[in-house]
Length: 78
Image (cartoon, rainbow, N blue to C red; front, side):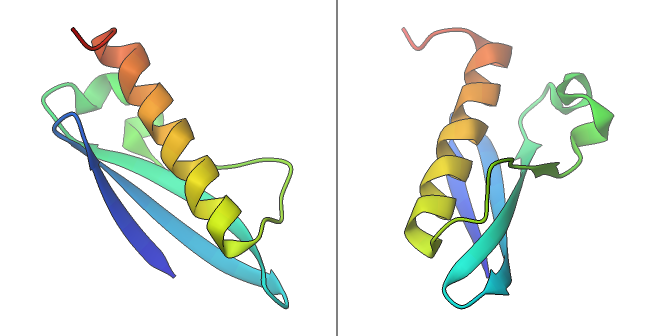
């Protein structure tokens, strides 16, 4: 299950992998923008810890983690 979330000219790509009934492991990847090379590991997928998560929770946690990573790169929103 995949989802793409646009945030501050970047894309946060979220992928859920089923591990049990209604429970998922989740990874995210940040793409786009002009500073992709500074994202580390060439913008690779990041596995979120402390799972598995329900579907809603997995998407929420991945979106917040992706937004936080972008905010660290770009600084606060004016």
